Amino acid sequence: MLKQVTYVTLFVRDQDKALDFYINTLGFEKREENPAGRVRYVTVGLKGQDLQLVLWPGTPGKADPLQGRFPVPASSRRAISRATSSG
Image (cartoon, rainbow, N blue to C red; front, side):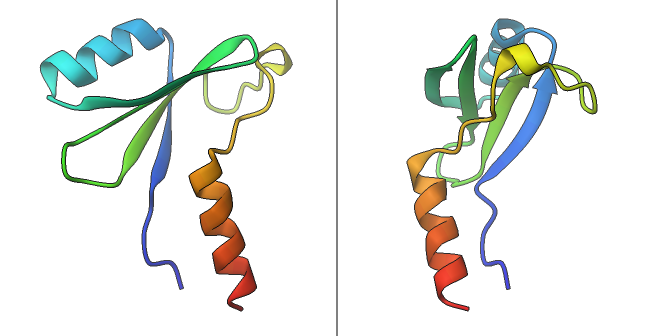
């Protein structure tokens, strides 16, 4: 059984505009920003909460092979490993 959700992906047309909206309008904080091939991996979250929104460029259901694979952060890989090894 799942105990926590840490990442939720939101597809956005413009990461900079989305960052501005979530940070300056809704009061989120930027958590991670890393290049991921030809795009940036950017997350935001509310202070004091573990949930992070991944602001991923694109349109749901419209894969763009030029953007590369969706990166899995090390913290998520560890959590997946723990969950699958515990049965």
